[in-house]
Image 1: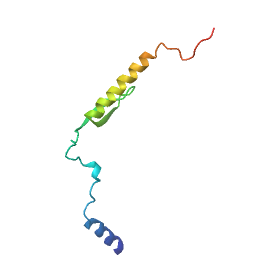
Image 2 (image 1 turned 60 degrees about the horizontal axis):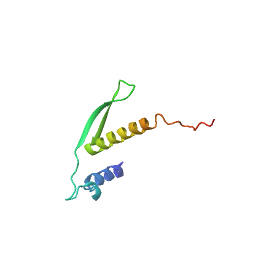
Image 3 (image 1 turned 180 degrees about the horizontal axis):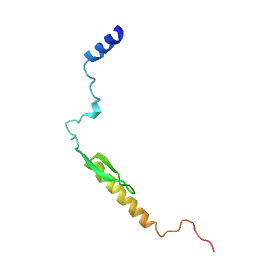
Length: 84
């Protein structure tokens, strides 16, 4: 029991670890603001809170638009070639 208390005291007395250097913005970089949106899941009454940067939200929307456009382009293309 005394060793546990001693170990906790040593841990509590240490200064917090410094974050990795890649997580902090440098002078040329700006940290983007994180925005949270509440989204309704398809086929459900439940909602989901999604927090991303504006760049990430825009990228998701663009990927979604590109996916829909790809499906529409391939809508009338036969999957198997018919041989008569």
